[in-house]
Image 1 (cartoon, rainbow, N blue to C red):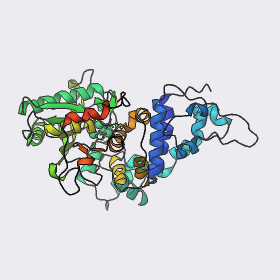
Image 2: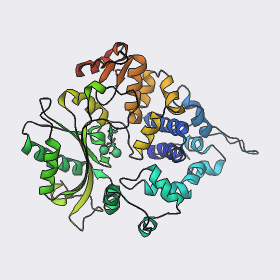
Image 3: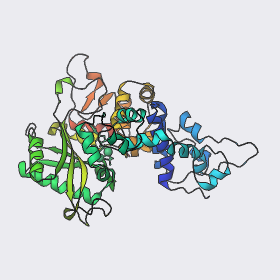
Length: 414
Ligand code: TTP
Ligand code: MN
Ligand code: MN
Ligand code: MN
């Protein structure tokens, strides 16, 4: 083994550990492994020895325990490459095979496999997946055969379009969707603003959905836009499913002191029929080609223009995987140990850089909180020192946002 491990493998080992920890509701290890995966991914080259990791942040006790070199009696083979670090370095056979026995164990674990399968369905979170698992279900067939099981509308659509939705969306497909959304929105409000956000705004080549922000040049003109967009998509016969969420946005009640997974903007989660002939180069060959179309997940979010910058920042996001984000966020809200741990530490800009790939939003918010005494969420940036307890908070204009990144030259890379 040369130790030059493909980037994906390096990252995946820790991501799988994170996912398993999440499935077991071990929030601390979950966060630690996610950070470790993120840090390892951001390193410029392969790690050949544990000493190479000196001074690298976010590889704390939990992570180091996984990476720790456990000498096998009678075997003095040193830990030579990252693979062995990931495996816990149990012996040369792992070094040679390139497998992590720990990760391998997880991958073949019945519960892990089942939860992974069930949470891959749109509308099925960890709680539901767990419930089904405990009932003894292991496959989609088991679910469909259980007539006592109530599936909600979203889950029904999730199963119906699972195979399409499960396959990633290419950039060309996202661009085709962008044209559809833009044309539809502009036919209603010609000067409307349509921005792709989420993973594709971060430059990803593939995504699990396509996210758009829609708004208008003046505050208030965006009201009613989403309903009209939905109607037009229905009329075009390309709307396969949608779930509308009305705005609960109320300036005077922000910022919320409770952590909230979702923002308050009006939004809609859709499944759209994307026709092959609209995509440059056609839809991906293995997805729905026999029908000439495929189903794709689309999110539409409509913030008023004066909240647009913050919504765009928040929705541009940083995650690369969709799994049970709401569960994770809700748990953070419970002010658990992991959240406290991560909130308690004032992280260096170096950390922010290393975790940029996957932890950007989290780090940004933490940076605002600890380094600038401000609160950042999808709706705004608030000056904590000027927030009287029971009175409406002072809202800072969007332009203040750049102050976060320009002081002290510490965050130039942001
Ligand atoms: P996602 O579309 O879930 O994730 P993504 O675009 O980063 O990656 P993928 O390719 O898997 O689609 O969410 C986009 C970002 O928006 C994500 O960082 C989380 C954020 N977000 C909110 O801020 N509020 C919300 O209510 C939701 C659902 C997401
Ligand atoms: Mn997305
Ligand atoms: Mn999305
Ligand atoms: Mn996603």
